[in-house]
Length: 532
Image (cartoon, rainbow, N blue to C red; front, side, top):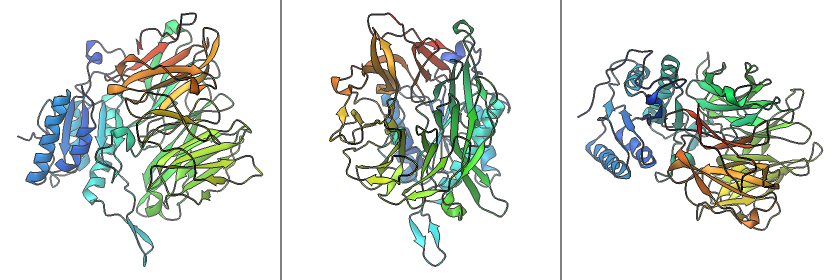
């Protein structure tokens, strides 16, 4: 029996308690709302939910009998894995008025921490040669529902006052892939940043924009947040960098309606100069396909890094499925977009500095279990492409390593975590085949007087796993250990003002969790999780 979209709570209220200062309610698992066009669209999203999830489904319509039975079967499988469903699916009335309003009503009844939906801007399948415009064969209702879900989730977060994390599943993705392997707008891996004053800040993308948690002046003061930062309406992804000057740089995608019709999708960035203070203005970096809004809306999510001279190099997958790069000088001046015409790439790019001061970029191939490597030595050198690298990444696993000149990924054939550096004949396996998603970490950690690299990743059931190896010696092997509770975002790591490794996650209740290294212990040991 389908439910109506009536509300249990008035707008501005929610069944999920506000996170700061919340009582016992804050420790429970908050629901995930799956918002799709029809029952068949919900199936891959249901398959990728881990055990313990509390799931609510919102559909534009009920579809045919076969679609509904497929969704029922996926619900049954999810229940067997340990997921729970508080009620029957919501089915909306497309002719009753605002689709966004109906989804918003359902979100107020559900009180979700996460919203999962479809691709708002699916890429083209073909080209209209006469009109020179892209042809998108994805059903229009899917994009319509995704865009309405994003608007509703934003409004819900602003009214409820609690963070909502959004995942948009890329159109055309393999139905068996987990969410982390096919998200249109990826979450950052380096979202925990040490400011110039030594205090830590955590930055994560939500439906309403970037939220920030800020460490107090002393450890006893705890953390402040989550605080919604002012800025444009962003898509639910984020790239976070700590620049050579110690500032935090936030990079994302904005999507706005054009007065003359269509939409404008642009890369935007902002800088956090002082810990806990307002973030600087969001600046447009543009779009490599800006001449055509129909092409520009397909741009991939940006990746970026700094070279030794302090120049920011920003990379995006463009309309033609190659990579475009734009450089920004330390004084803020922008060079034009440069297209690296080579192997066709997927929406997955990792950028990282070279040990000699240059810049590397590795992108996963679009049509093969392979990757391409680009390298630029300095201002006087051009970009060099290398397609013959021994990198076969599982989707959604590429990340820049904490050491200069390395990239990490999960091997497509086994899901094992691997490290590779340009010039190496083969990657080095680091174990950890359980779990999904990228690997983060820090280099130079003090473990009993030895300099070590500490790694963090999502493990089985999204529980954070921690490992370590001597700096520069990943070949010695990594011993992984689980850290406790699951996280709704990839775990992050940074150093605090005392040089201790700090690991941060966000629990299934939406609250920030922080664990600190215990210096002087017999090995790599951390405190219990502090919940904020």
